Length: 103
Image (cartoon, rainbow, N blue to C red; front, side, top):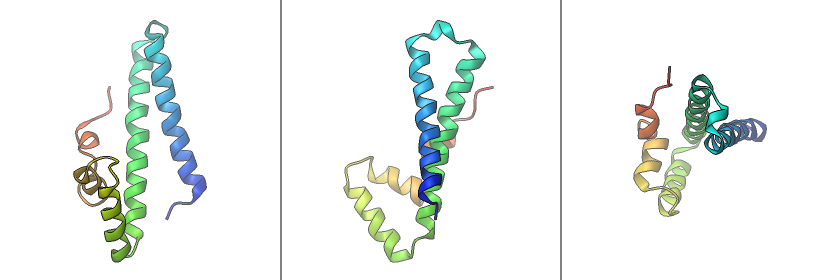
């Protein structure tokens, strides 16, 4: 299981990637094409890292706990049941399976 410090690092990296994207959207002329690509790639990689960490932690739980947690998440109204299943049990978020870093 990941510790709180590592979770905070992952969340901070994702927040920073999206903050940079917001700045870029506000003033796109201030960024080169390479910088815009890097911002997009950071958004993809940091979000995928968070989801991968969620999956890794989920897989370490006992089976009964996994079943209860998955059921609770599916009923939460946050994302769809299919999304939770894909992320935690299936092949991962479909978006990140199809997206590749920009080159």
